[in-house]
Image 1: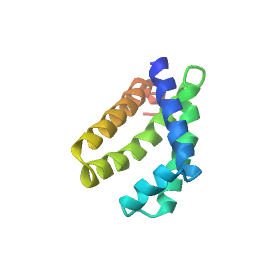
Image 2: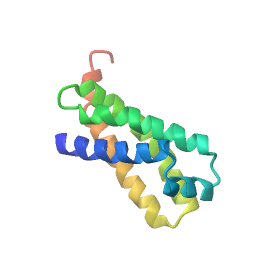
Image 3: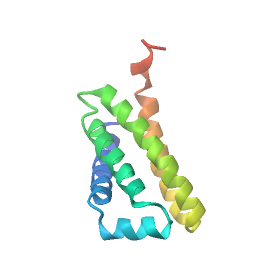
Length: 116
């Protein structure tokens, strides 16, 4: 699980920073999808906030759970966008990433049992 959390954490940290700093590729994509650029910054901000939780998951497992749940929400939107506005191959890629985020969240769910 640790390797998956680190890989996802690095991935989302990089893509989140690209969105926050308005990398030209991200700006072009959001404009092509006809989404406002504030949504790009919001998604990037959520990714940058959630990614360290995954990276620190070994020492702070609750943060990994919270980060994975936030990223699941982001990836639901990304998966919808890629299936609705691009060829299906792009949608499948985001669906796999969503599944990996869900896998981390489900694997860390035992942290919530005291409250459920």
